[in-house]
Length: 134
Image 1 (cartoon, rainbow, N blue to C red):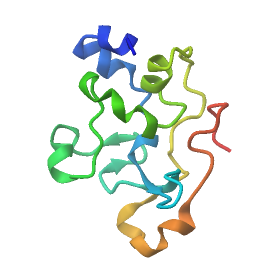
Image 2: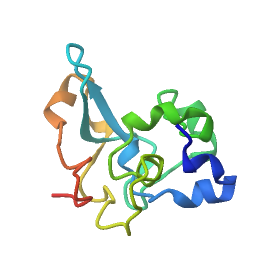
Image 3: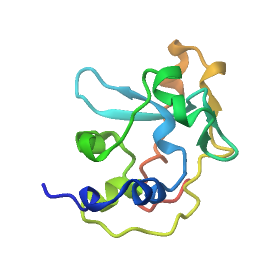
Image 4: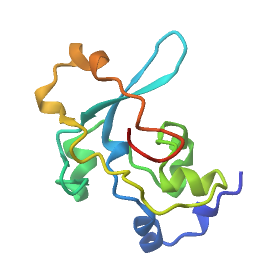
């Protein structure tokens, strides 16, 4: 696939981000079906007010599970929320103005949730087709 994302320079790449924080939520994969489920549990490094990483520059070091989306890792698009601007552009869908996409006020920090509790935090509003949080 010849993705429009490959035409972006580094500044354009960073500017494309909606700064919604949805990609920073813990995801669970169903071992039987491979289906990805989003939770309302945010990475402990996500500032849930600004929806930005508290240590963006060092995010891969401080959080080894962090996803580093880049033009060389377009294979990660399937795990990005359907509302994600990178995914929308990659899939040839129109970009939209952020419409209540931010996770602010809708999530809890990972530091307060034990891994055994994660299934209780599965939500369906992350990749809502309308782009609206319910």
